[in-house]
Image (cartoon, rainbow, N blue to C red; front, side):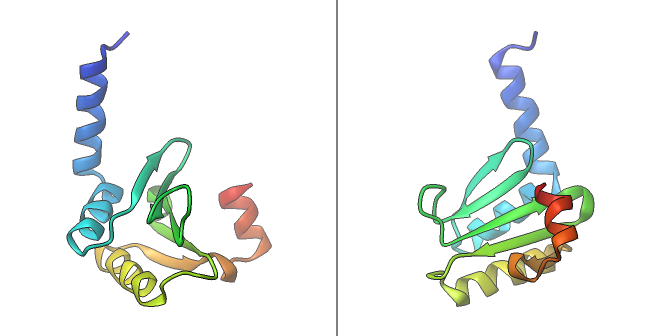
Length: 108
């Protein structure tokens, strides 16, 4: 079994070298501080996971970011986050524009 320090080092290297890590770092550099969660999927919550204005669901294998906005979302900030994701090379979709088939595929 790997010790705690080895696991942290593996995750740090993955974060630095992966596309989602580059997206998270670019958001931070542009003043959009999100909480990053990596589990079954990769999610970035703004401003935090407990009271999000919007969530970015990142699917690196599909080169896709799905943005799920709440009614009180800061639209200019969401647009800026979307532009950053597109600049890095992701396709960006709004959750409200997904088909039932896409919702089932990505979230089912």
